[in-house]
Length: 230
Image (tube, rainbow, N blue to C red; front, side, top):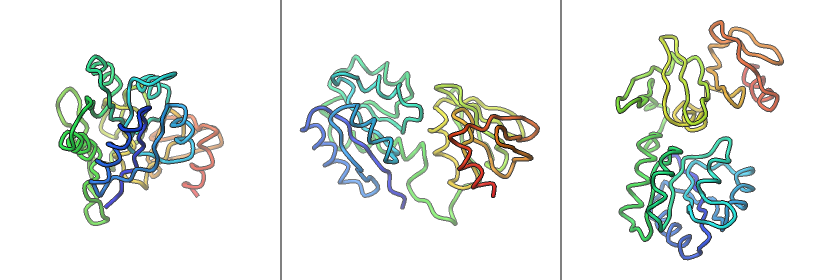
């Protein structure tokens, strides 16, 4: 069973303790760190991979919503707050859930289940890997075969899935959509593009051609891409 690496951010120590307690009751959750403000969390995310972020909204200096919006590739987010008025704003940035303090373990578990449902983390092994993904568009789930995917294109809070059979625009940023893909077979080549490595027809130091489409190869992604292609 794959562990879900979590980060807890809250300026109130009792709130952190409650979240740590609840997370400790779910075997699949692994709390990698806790932070008392957004600036600490920003520095930690530079060094540590995080799948799921539990973050308070009403914090000094930088609110939870402002912090998530500032991240280029944010992890999945579950907001926690004592103020109901922030609910609409949290969903506008595709938060998984919104926990209104004080909340019990049952409500916490329901929020974690939303992560597991979206990213399919309940049980993974080499024999059970799926050959398809269901993407939700306008309340309808569309089946996409993984082998048909050519590349993914970032559209800020949305991602366009380019396949050999057409295009699909889904809610969620590029990093979020990448979590649904197999770990091998896809590589990010630019802040706006992730490609299927087996669909590359040619490349050089500045661009990659996939299915006849020229895509930019970002300098910060070049080394990883070249190592995959080798």
